[in-house]
Length: 234
Image (cartoon, rainbow, N blue to C red; front, side):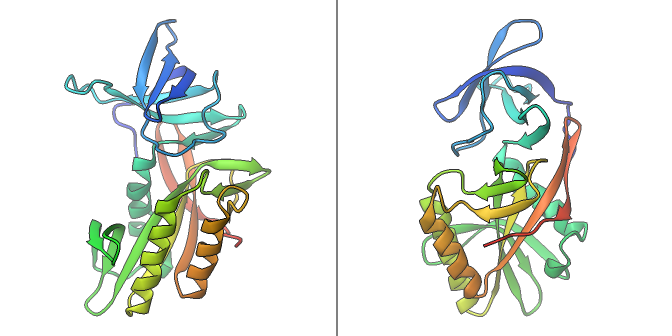
């Protein structure tokens, strides 16, 4: 996934109201970016951090520029734009990075399903088999090389796990793919210290037959690509 037009850089002043971030441009001027991330962004929103943003050049948008990347701990890059995750996983599947989910001739995005009125991120379809794929973006690095999900309590995330379990119970395949959009993360674990209920639900889902994968990313201001398998320790 290439950034087109190229990203521009700035320094983070603050992130606030969940969807806004004030930054200082190299010229010294300040501007407000749209923050396309509804999570806590724990560890990824430190004032003074170097950030990169995209410019939609859309005059109809109140905030035409969107925050995309952040430098973490002065050495790692993380993509905080969670809207990129589905496309990145789709690219990885088409490139054969995850052979367990290969062989489906059709792929659809954001398809309604389930008993709780959910929308699956990616639906893989064959002539006689379907696989429901839920994608989660991982950017929380707390221990050396270990990433955690979620970065705050997520009732919605637990709902998605229930839907995946129900899909398996009905005879379909279901998979959760962690899109690890942080170059410092080498392993993913459930964040039991932040949301123990999600960790319990994740383990129960795996026992029920939900498949679990994690893909690590190469990230730079030119583009992002999921290139490697990472272990998930539950």
